[in-house]
Image (cartoon, rainbow, N blue to C red; front, side):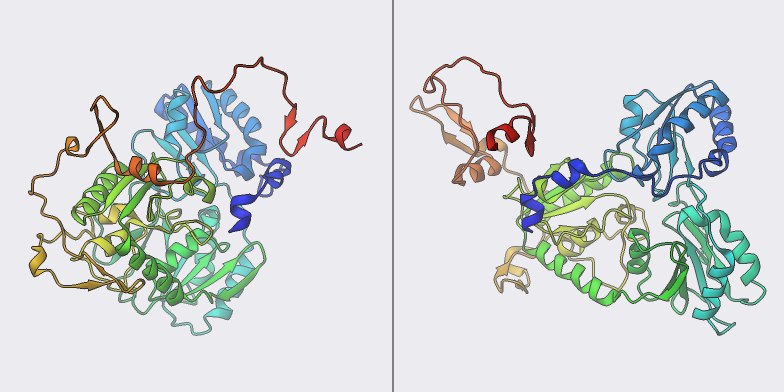
Length: 477
């Protein structure tokens, strides 16, 4: 905790970014699929295109942009920094450049976008097919095993060859395929379409008795899969190390941690809604849904857009008891152990505030599943009078708390009722809860003190950055 709040930032200022996962120098055309990208630009008639790279691929951005301009005649704009996670398409930055489409490079969460046409180019990272199939056989010696094979998107290009080698030996193995279009459309009863993956399970008798084999490194994608399909046993193969293993992450412990956060959300009185995406379709709808949910639950909410959340940013909002992060399915599971206040997902907030939603063992990381008409939507029950409400006791503090919903048709107090005397002239000023909390703080920042501070001439200050001013060496010599 101390490191998160008191770091002098020297490590970040002096850190050198290396192209750890950059493409081979002589194979830019193949790694970045220049032909497919050029066909996308020509087919759409786009004249201005944004190229979005993650940090590890930025070393190739200039070369890729130059080749794309030469091949298409369109203007290319490189988006060097993303507003939120690099796995999401940054439509806001693209629109600032006046782009008509986006070429998204590198790993992607495959969340549907709202406005701009997008082509995902994952970057074809190499995969040792022989070692991958060998690891699969070691983990699943029974040839009748029912297994669903998933992969990181950067290895999707090689999964067809893996399937050709394993399918003759394993008749009950199903391979998922990556789908970049909107995955919220109708699916058949024997088909699963989630997280940009699609695979049939009818022949396997459903997912309840299936195992999952994931090709890719440990990360947010694998964690999201394991929490969502928490009744399946997971194994993985890491192409970087060439090792296969049974996943030892105790999903039950992870779920218990998340359920503890649900209990914290039930105790909270002030909730901060963190906007973690501006490009995923439906984010405005879920923001409105959460505001209404919190209003009906008798909690006060504030909507905050702070970019990429970190402990220092969120520590400025001491009046907030808990935060809920609206982000893509991969970034919504934020580890908040270093934060001053916990951070929950929209699904966890629904578990806390919607009495009609019960824990069934299923976990949802995609906020669009909670919206009206979606697979996991649960309507709010009618309000219960306070006299008929079932008493509810906090499992953390042991105190009584309100558990009933407010009547949505009850007249709301207008803001003008929160008035107070401002000065001797009896002028009235509206007092907001945030302003009241600010008044209660012992320290409130700089004060103007107009007319009290003597005026002085401006003088030249120190030069350099805070950790290494130019004159520091002379002072100590």
